[in-house]
Amino acid sequence: MKKKKIMLIFGTRPEATKMCPVVQELRKYPEWFETKVVVTGQHREQLQQPLSHFKIIPDIDLDLMKENQTLAYFTSAAIKGLDQAIAEDKPDMILVHGDTQTALCGSLVAFFHQIPVGHVEAGLRSHNKWSPWPEEVNRRMVDVVTDVLFAPTSVGRDNLLREGFSSNQIFVTGQTAVDAAILTKKSDYTFQNDSLNKLIQHPGRIVTITAHRRENLGEPMRQMFSAIRRLADDHPDVMVIYPVHLNPAVREIAIPILSGHERIHLLEPIEYPDMINLLSRSYLILSDSGGIQEETTVFNKPLVLMRDTTERPEAIEANAVVLAGTDELSIYDNAAILLQDPQRYLEMANVKNPFGDGHASKRIALYLAYYFGQLSEQPEPFYSHLTDRN
Image 1 (cartoon, rainbow, N blue to C red):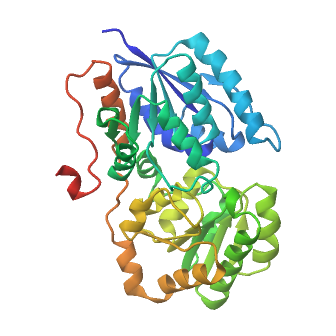
Image 2 (image 1 turned 90 degrees about the vertical axis):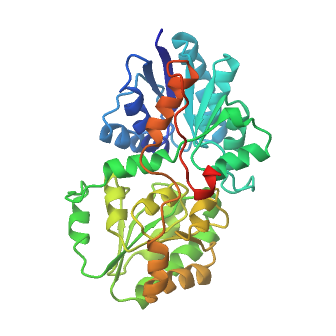
């Protein structure tokens, strides 16, 4: 049987960390697949980090990022660039990931060319079009033009079924972020950022922070950072590590509030392997990120989520994440309980990971082989809950 050409399109660091394991898995089956990687450059330096880590060299790099790019600019530039790449390459299927502008543009152009779309991480929903913005709407639009919906868990599957998608379109895979984190965590890891090799020796507890979401810019972020400084003030054994996002709007809030404290360390952005190994060595995480909700559960680290909504309710239901909102008092109280109450901490630290088992990428590859008739039987899906089997 003729091998099928699979084009994977991504453009941001989070997409790359979750799609590179899929690229690696597809390339284990050269008799089935010819694999092409196209990157838009929605992120530039940050995108290169996971590509280098996973040893993936893109076949096409559109290099579209420009300073202070708007959503309108990037969307129009990506559609134009991807249209040309897809017209020339003529893949049999296009895989996109998640909820970025790159995913939206890749799926739309595939649809324009009547090429089947596979959406990795389909079905996530916050049910609020403004949060996360613009990702919630992007993801919904991608799902509409998708032929194969790779939902990471049964929650995503059920969201899609309620919206009228056919069960025959949906396959539950587990989360490829779990695959990536398991592949990246090393017990004998040496950090590329040398300051982390020193900071990680702190005799007390390490609290790692990430914060960058657009909808949190301004007063919500001031509240978040004020809560974090109070936590450091009130817990003398705690050291806070925060790789500060490059966005100037984040930095102009973070630096005045958090700098000048002997146990708060503001770093430049760190590479993906450093972040994963920092998370695995932390006691507690505070973040407004989407994907980090999947990564902290791999290492049984409680997460205080500084957001008003989440499209990943599995972690809340599993008691691995607490949704604290962006109010200073709520963030402080939720984090302080975990720093002061060992029983509450253990309740969150000892839950089963609801997101995956490290084999999502393999399930995707095998399902594609089944979809194209190279395998006669559909692979087993990921069962995120015992009730999934019923």
